[in-house]
Image (cartoon, rainbow, N blue to C red):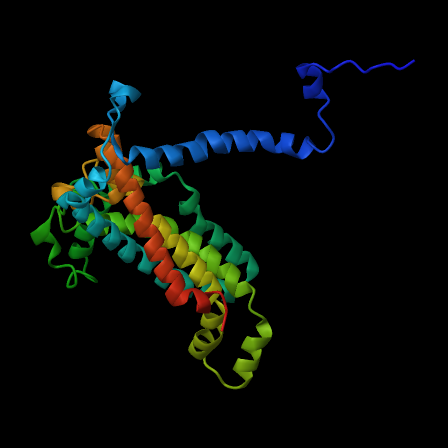
Length: 324
């Protein structure tokens, strides 16, 4: 006489899954989150870029327009102004970060380990500090009448030691850092430089620590100066780290949003003088409620970042990755 095993209900199958399915069950929370908050928004933004849609009117108001959103964004002069500002800020702040971070990392490596750890932590602190908090502090520092920067310039102009170099200060005060079309971009670039240089210092310090000390000792015995040891040993062996850091700088600086948004109070400055592409995208999507054009601009920004990153890989990828 045979006994048939009763069929398990869904609750029993849930607590007694088939053999071999456990890894998939453990991955299921991540897969669900990725599909809902990662893949779906990505695909929906592509679909949306070919439509006109006001989110307040609901999904029924969505209307297909083909490539009209891309053509409309391409012909907007404000987009090109925002593109120029974005590239200007990316180059100015990004180049300064690496020109300062590399020699600073060399100095840190030359110091004792205890002092190096303290200084590295101090340099890294701005990077982990809230961008909003840092931007608000700099907004206060850039104040024309009460900001510490203008007060420092006035103090230097009145000092006996540096007065000759800052004699021009009383004639231009108060400097309106965030209201002048010429000063606002350098003000934003300095904030970005101050916040992200510490990350590159830590990265380059780590890279320099991987270089064998025997190479420096051999070069020192051969009579090589400190500069020649840096130029012929440190810099070539640091190329993979430089390549990685510059890649992150390109991707990050082309997406600047919080720093210029807070410093200019969301306006982008006088005459859009500090408005970036991300700010322009935000304004189109959430102020004008034109989500189709905003999605098209976001994909245009994606293509721009991809092109510049590909050029960087093409020009420096082989050397940066240590290939010959």
